[in-house]
Image (cartoon, rainbow, N blue to C red; front, side, top):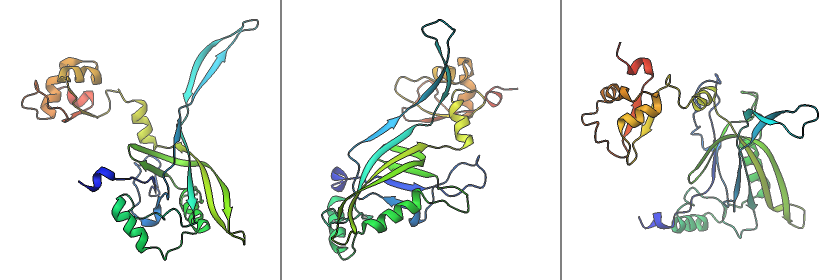
Amino acid sequence: MLFDQGKLEKMTIRAFKPRSNPKDPPKVSDDPKDTYVVQVNPNSYTLNHLLEYKYQQGQGFSGGEAKYDKSLPTTLQFEFLFDGTGVVPPPSELGDIPLIGAIASALSGSTEFKVKDEIDKFNNLVYKFDGKIHRPRELLLIWGYLVFPCVLASINYRFTLFKPDGTPLRAIASCSFSESSSDAEREQKDNATSPDLTHLREVHAGDTLPLMTDHIYGKPDLYLEVARVNKLVNFRRLRTGTQIAFPPVDKAVKP
């Protein structure tokens, strides 16, 4: 409890395991080489939501109606630091606990943080072409409440400090990542209210089973079948935080 009050979470980038079938759900790799913890958290990041419209404009008219075409993948942009001067401690597996992280950094002082080696390690994870899957790796970026499945769109390194022999001591990486999801995830997201899918919903204060059923199916009278499927004894008093499954319509309705 003491350490939780001062916990510092580091931005972490993990690679997904290669998928033989694009429709398979992604699984995060548990190989330590497929994880990178940043040395210093970025000061800020930018999430971009982009929409595309087509405009039909007749000759002689000053404007036209915007016809929705598609929603482009969300992009995430940020900058973070590679610092080999020794001023900034290197990343540590215990670095998210201030006191222990400081001790771990002090004990690992003999391990030099080399900017070039760290950049190579980072590139191997996010940028390098993987011959087994014929593309760079799919990634999961995690920082606090931010959980972002993505692929690297672009990266730019700006070197700002050097040793007398030209060896870089400090670099700033400007990164752009594009949201990426499997076909199955995308279909489910695009049809989030479809009655042909199984939905899992958490009960919030004020929720009633008929209201939730109406939201999913458009038919509040199916709430008795939902209660039966979930084995709810007292469906009139739903407990906040309870997870309720709403099956496809053909399974929720008795034959």
